[in-house]
Length: 337
Ligand SMILES: [Zn+2]
Image (cartoon, rainbow, N blue to C red; front, side, top):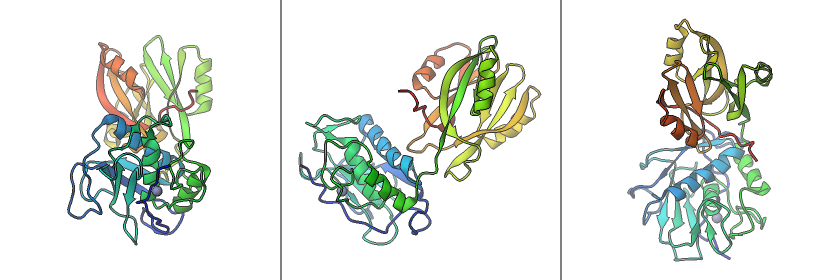
């Protein structure tokens, strides 16, 4: 058994504009520490630069973001980032696995998370019991960093003892996060994707009735759920923005933009019909969102969007497509078994 002996009991402290329980945590920034600053609560001995560990940290923030009304955004390291993460040489293998250092009183501010460099870490989740699961320990330390103390529930992630039988947030952990920030107000909706075979254009819709009528029209070939986003009504989700939808009359395909200026320009174009807000997504990346890549089809003049990084790579190598970068940020489809 390993101990998280350096962690704190920190009831009554939270992120966000209000310290009142069950109010939003707003957007909390996090960074991979790149140096030590004079005003930080504890120093790092080295920095987390390995991609596998960085990916796990983002997964850990995403787990909390999925259940509570707080969002996490990765930013460049600086002394005023909300939660900074790095390695420390704590006590060799075993013993203390990590620690979150928070202010002793007052609102949460400039939290430091130190992970013990010398553990026999396993990345990517589902660690074998012979190793220590980095996602698990990081999720536990982030729990402290957002105001959660240890629980007496032995099979909860916020118990002070590492338990290789536990994976992911448990009911008691989720209840703790909801008690501080309220439940997540994110309700993901499927955005369906279709290919118009005859012109090669793609059609996207978040509306089930429209999806059904497009399925019935044999001109389009269903390509399943392209990605997940938020409904038009989800205006209260922190950082979310409307994604405007246009119909390309020539191609029978859709164009989406999160950019107000681009929206105004496209509104002036003959071949595009403005269809309002298609859905909501994000113009900044949070811990649980993924980039939706945008391509311009230089042959047809249509746009193509994909959440799939393998498909992005494949399309990048195709003649006739110009990569236009990240269109917006949304969620990967999680319906796939
Ligand atoms: Zn702890």
